Amino acid sequence: MAPVIGLTCDGDLENRRFFLNRAYVEAVSRAGGIPLILPPGPREAAERYLDIIDGLLLTGGGDIDPVFFGQEPREGLGRVLPERDEFELTLTRRALQLGTPILALCRGMQTLNVAAGGTLYQDIAREVPGSWQHSQRKPRCYPHHTVEILSDTLLATILGPKARVNSMHHQAIREPGEGLRVSALAGDGIIEAVEGTVGSFVLGVQWHPEELFTRCPEQRQIFQHFISAADISTSCRNPGYRGRM
Image (cartoon, rainbow, N blue to C red):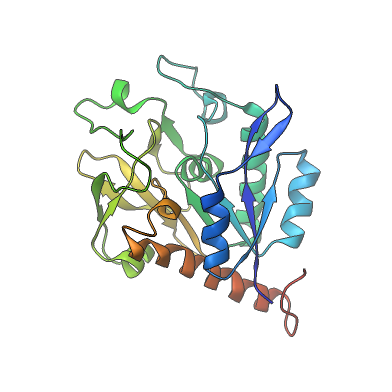
């Protein structure tokens, strides 16, 4: 059976609802996975989720509360949802311990980095002189700038030495966390992708490949490699039994 992929989601506590862009769900389904949305919950919920998923997709959303990476809030910090941050950091740290395959997109890459002990720029424009515009003013389905992909990386095997990507962020990785290495950079030096140095599939990209399937079909390969890794992980952990759903 196809691997079950847990997708984190955003929240609106005032109106008591959770939500997720449809493109994430469609991307997982088209790559051969079974999407399962994971609303924020207590620590015990994170453990239960990891018992039933074969891969973890960390999705985009608002800013990460700087308290989680040892900073005070600075000018330019956007909307934060500490409940989501705390839950996803717990979920990600445990997934890293278990060797669960992880794909982290945009905010998700920042979550991955903070979970691994790294830090962020709270607002690129204010903290990085000469930085590019990283919040594009065109539809999400259009690429915005080029990233240079480092050789001998997982991402290079997927996309090659360069890629055109979209860009909808104003926070970024400042210092990579333990066990992560940089695998792509923008021309202004902003980190655009990180990946795990050992063990299972761990890849974070600062863009939204799920929105680029039509104009940049090579971006589908990111999801294909992720789902394949989750499928292998399922087989290794459950010999002779494919899937749980």
